[in-house]
Length: 292
Image 1: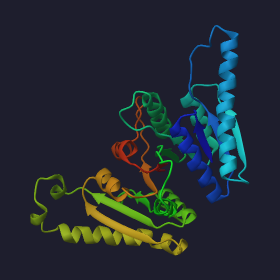
Image 2 (image 1 turned 180 degrees about the vertical axis):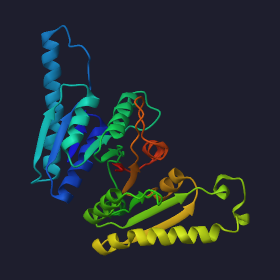
Image 3 (image 1 turned 180 degrees about the horizontal axis):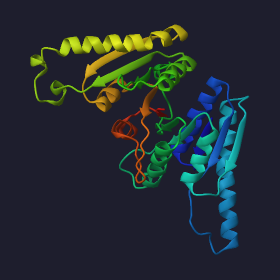
């Protein structure tokens, strides 16, 4: 389990999430510092030394904090001196799961971080989780603390035309280690879902089409239900835009999981429209799992 560190509230949230996940899965936690990156060293030796000290201090502080919150968790740390995208891709190449902070949209400071995160997601063959910082009040009522401690659903989006067994396994395992329910969502194209017709006047074959897709989803999940009998599973099939359906289902979820198709274009960061939309708009952590 690896988390990227830069000292920001977002990366702190990523470290917290990764530490909990490592403890759930019985794995060690590795912290990598790859921000901020400066293409040229300072002309001052003292400035360079101060920067190295600060980088080490950021790592040590996060490692110490995670260790105090999770006693017994084995934590290692590393400062990557290379360009952030290169460093994180290298970390993603050997780790089970890479966790990064996400600042979302509308903040200039988040532009580079967003570009780096999307670059990692587009290029790696390992699952990547993006976590946003959630501001917590200094004093919370007991009922709020209790509600936050309860396991929240894990939501996963499935494409029935190109189902990925690795994505399904990741989703069931994520729900199992959290002792949470799994909500499996499949959305499909329908003229009635795009405003061309009222839902009161759905096409005659729409109900049967929905039933057929629901049967396909149930059959697809049957062996996984048997393997993960302790996981409660909810299935949802409906016409509509996939990203909208997933964001609605994950409005109170603990984790949203999406698959990413491989893109062979030589230029650009290609994460796919659904992945792009949920990464920018989901309020909960988002796991992106490459599909083989």
